[in-house]
Image (cartoon, rainbow, N blue to C red; front, side, top):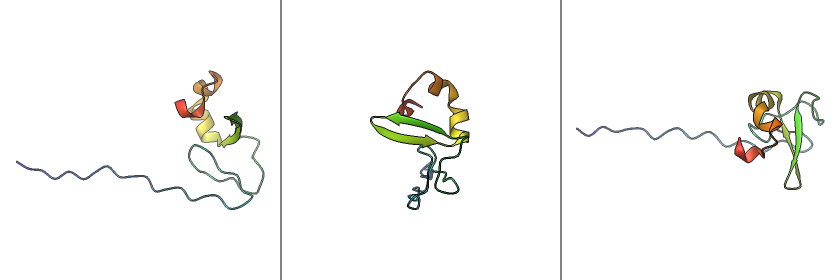
Length: 73
């Protein structure tokens, strides 16, 4: 029997944030205003400053505390 299987759905590409706004480097959530909220995590990896929203930071807190680059989590 030949069964057709649908390919897995691809996530929609994230839209780039508007100029001056801050976006989560992991999920793409944008912060209100043009400043980083105090509940967000900031990290410098390979000379680039990355920001992670509260949800992503909480989800990956053990990897963050182990000082793993975000590519590992």
